[in-house]
Structures are given as C-alpha cells and as structure tokens.
Image (cartoon, rainbow, N blue to C red):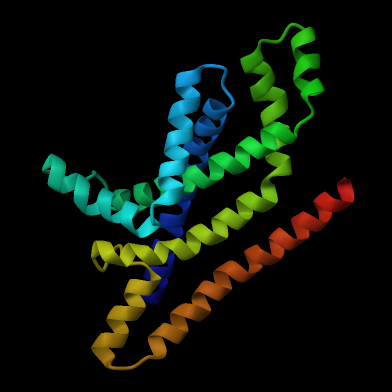
Length: 210
C-alpha cells in the first residue's frame, strides 16, 4: 500500500508539473506579448493563483466545480492534477519569463535578420536557451510540487489514488500509531533529497558557465 501511495504521489506530480509547465510557458509568452489583452490576462492569472492558497485552489477544483456544474472532472487523477497544475503554472510562468528575458536580445534580432519569423525564432532559438538557464529553478518547482501533493488529502481520494500523506494519516489513525508519519516523511526525503542535490549541482555548473 505504501508503494502504491508513493506511486500515486509521483503520478500527481508528473501530471501537475507537465500541465503547469505547458500552461506556464503559454502564460510567460502572453506576459511578453505586445498584445495588451494577452498581457492583462496573464498578469491577472499569475497574480490570482500566486495570491490564493494552493489548498483553496485544489478545493475549488475538487469540490467547487462539481457543485457548480453538477459533475466533476473526468479521470482518476484529474481533480488533484489539475489543481496542482493551475497553481504551478502561475509560478513557472514567472520563472520562464525571467529565463526568456535573460537571453540576450541580440539572439532574437540576429534570427530575425536571417529571415526567421518572430514565432520561429522564439521557438527554435530563444526558448531553448531560456530553458537551459532556468533548469535549476524549475527543478526547485518540481520539489515544491512533490511536497504540495500532500494537500490532496482534502479531496478524500480512494485507496487506489491516495497519496503519501493520506496513506500515513489513515494508517496512523487505524493503528493508533504515529510510525506511519515517520515512514511517509522518510519516503518524501528519499524522493526530494536527490532532487535538491541535483539543483545544487546544476546551479554550480551554471555559475561556472557564466
């Protein structure tokens, strides 16, 4: 059961991170757009979801939407993953935007002078360089997202989709023993510590490259 809970935690993390990254990239490009409506939408979204508690966002997706629409999101992992992705996108958007702005403007100008469209230049030259710059902070976002999966226990997931914290809470309450909390903490550390070490390594390499 612990293995299943750890697996579910990683599944929620994967979908939340992937969705947040894709949507965050779109938001970052909208923030940098010359079209005012796009900038307003992206800015409003980022400020809203960075200002709201992640737990509230997850509850809105898991409970508010089904109440309002009469049905929830389809899919076993959808409510939790979408809630995490909405929050992650707001933070990743700012990270990606900073990475894009860190790429020298001459790169884009040189590409345009060679006849590339702005869209192609951004996709093939600017964005790849930006992602190389922001790999360390994005890895940090991944670590934070892994820990944020603990908030999903409020959704009352089933045994087939419970993540680590819900597993630990249910097991501790049923056995009247606090050991499951310690075990869950060790599993989280086993997942996150290698990633934090990777972040430190990437940051040192990035500093040497500069």
